[in-house]
Image (tube, helix red, strand yellow):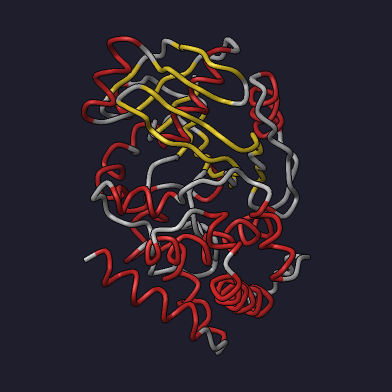
Length: 311
């Protein structure tokens, strides 16, 4: 069984697509969204078509027996609630797949990223060898409890943290492909994490400050100049960390131009009065920048302003 831990807009879309293809899937959700899924399943509008999927749903991961894979799709501020639920799946040998924004808790094997994992509690809970890294390249919105609208592509690159090719990752990639989700196996998943991060680093906090959609920010020349400066700083941090992304700042912004004109997840959360997922995006980048002595004044500025905006 595959359990989607965090069946929000992205996790719910993945769960619905996998269930529609015949995979054995369960979801962990909360509140009215959980109640709606239990009552009438997941209703999905997507590039794969519009469909309904019935899936077992629970409020706690421990209600599922021995899942083979646990896909972590919840927001970073929900780790405190999630951590007590992991032990049983860890002991049963489940593979945990991180499909979350920002730098993941496992990013630096030799040290803890305090911005993402204060005190190293997550690293202590999930053995390194039970982790697969992943990156999300799709957008989604919860229209109403149990109802999800997905837009953009269906790309979910995955990779073993050591770059190896294993049976478990090949099996997972096939399950995704059978569901119409493209999950290429990457030898250097950290490079793909950084490529995604650069977009979030610029677009997410600036969208929260301006209230603008992705296309509106990119089409406004002064705002685009700020976004480009932020991406340039992110590229400098990545290079200092030994990661060559393979794109320029302008090329990375052009990639964002090709997605649907949507609100970032950060802007959606702000408008809904939810906590903002800033620490693993901005905070972790700033933490690495200080470690390597890389100046990041634009990132520090938008991070400070967005934190105040959130408060």
